[in-house]
Amino acid sequence: MRLLVSGLGGHMGRLVADLAMKGYRGASLAGGVDPAGAEDLDVPCFSDFSSVGCEADIVVDFSHHSVTKDLLAFCVSRSLPVVIATTGQTDEEKQMIKDASEKIPVFFASNFSMGIALLSSLVKQAARVMDDADIEIIETHHIRKADAPSGTALSLAEAVQEVRPDSVIKTGRSGFGVREHTDIGIQSVRMGNVAGIHEVIIGTQTQTLTLRHEVHDRSLFAEGALAAAEFLMGQENGLYDMGSLVSG
Image 1 (cartoon, rainbow, N blue to C red):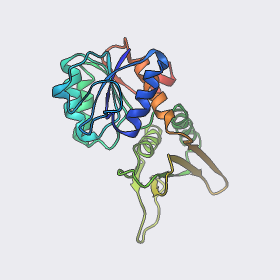
Image 2: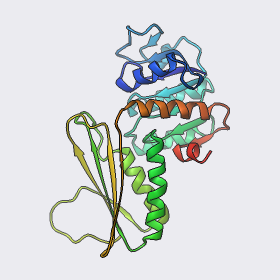
Image 3: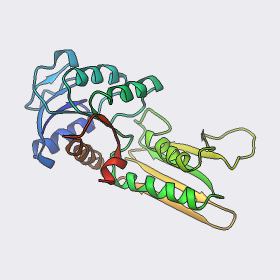
């Protein structure tokens, strides 16, 4: 499968490119889109989607959520499946993704780690079985991460909401006020060069269960994105995520 990488000049885009050039999961690198360019890579890199002049089988996006509209318009116009690994989308942009998935296969996830996909499943199970427990989420990332809370932390909270529909996501905590049992608290920490830590604390008056996932190398996200791309090839139009991939 020939990849067009959106955000080719960025750190994650380059990790995807490196894997593709090594033939990981049968991938090859057709080119990229990045306004900053990627002159050191021996593939064409275009400044925007309107100027793309290479053929590809699928698009992998590790750019910025503000590109969503142009990215989807390009993919729909060429009937190309797309893997969206960018986070921080607005509600309007998320709706664009849903609308596009009616016309092309779209794989959209906040985190491309297989471990996080499994963590989400475990969190959902724990929230259902320990229905009297309070649930808090702590996420830690490097100082360059702009969005808070992380998309992954929000997706973990949303997994809880699937089995506890009356729960409410609360980001940050300050001032005075008693915690409600229906709260799902999310705290964000930004420090150093931490690639990503997500910790879900599920506690009652008598016991606490802590589920934690830690990233050791960001290349795992590139590996997950290419696994998603391989999965998406040949799929029907629709919206897919890591749960789709893990469940087969």
